[in-house]
Every structure is written in C-alpha cells, then in structure tokens.
Amino acid sequence: MAMSGPAKTVAQTVSVVLLMGGLAWASVPFYNWFCKVTGFGGTPGQVSANAGDVLDQTIKVRFDGSLNQGMPWQFKPAVTEMELRIGETGLAFYEAYNPTDKPVAGQASYNVTPYSAGPFFEKIECFCFTEQVLAPGERVQMPVSFFVDPEIVTDLDGKYVHTITLSYTFYEIDLPEGYAALDQGSQTNLN
Image (tube, rainbow, N blue to C red; front, side, top):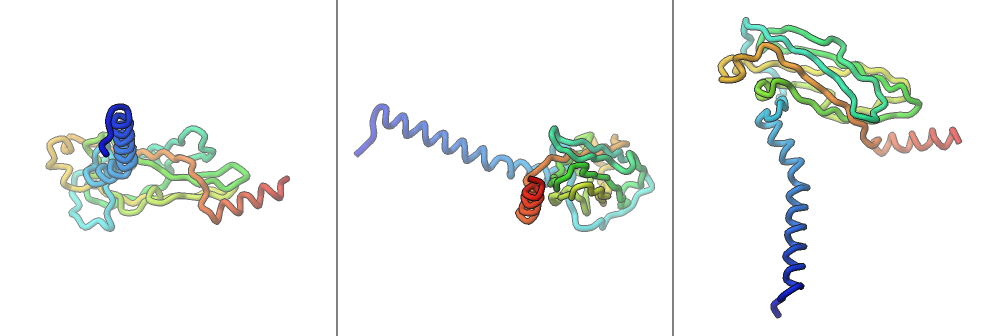
C-alpha cells in the first residue's frame, strides 16, 4: 500500500529531519579530525616524536591561556614567549590552579595563529590531549612539548610567519565517575 498526500509529506519531512540530525551529529567529530589532519583553522598536528632537521632560522612562539565563562580555575602560561630554532623541540608549561573547595575537571581546546602555521606546528605531548582534574586548592604545571616543522620555510604562506601564538582555552567538563563520587561524598559531609 503506497502512502499519499499528508502521510507521504510527513514521512519525507521526518526522513529529512533524521538525516540532517545524523549529519549534524557526525559533523563535530569529522570536523575535529579534518582540522587535526590538515591544520585547518590553526589546529596544530600531533606526532609521537620529532624526527626532523633543525634549521639555523629561528621562530618566536607566544603562549596564551584563557578560561571559558564559568570555569572556576586560574590558568596562565608560565612564560609568555620563547624563541627556538625551526625544527627544535620546545617545552613550555602552563599553570592551572583550582581555588574552589571541590574537585573540578577541565578540557583544553587549542589553536595556533596565524592559521597558515597550523599545519607546521606539531605537538609531541600536551595536557590538552586528555581531561584534567584538579583537587580543591591544587596548583599544577602542565607541559606541552612541540616543534615547528622545517617545511614551513618552503610553504607559500608559511615562509612569511615569524611569530606563532599557541592559545588554550579551558572548559569545565563533568567529573569522571570516580571523582564524582568523591565530590558528592564531600557535599554530604558538609550538610
């Protein structure tokens, strides 16, 4: 039995809504993957080690840290700038502090500017690869190990980059399950 009239229109509309919802749901992980692979939007790459050449030419790397609205931590780079040779592995630290009386979990998003440097800024290790949980009153130094790929000097846009800014923004996320139980236990004791 074939549908006709209003029933067919409703079925088509529901199908389109479900298709669009599915595409929207898949777009975020696909976009994140695309940015990591291509460096689009200033997203740095991730590698397991620096196996490249080190050039005599230097580049300046600036560090920036911010918090999403409502994130109760304090967060800043330990140093705001360093100069290193292109291809040389750099190590920088960011400081985070939880001034609250409860554990708080966070995840950092990141990018580099100018965007043309994104495909050449490679992270080896970074606190941003995993969620972070700080206990009440805890202060930590969080490292990021990186290098600038020497291929930047032959890229049409990259060869004009002399300063790269690495920016992080921390967002509050739900506590992992083990921490959530501890947090609820401390709230019970306070009541």
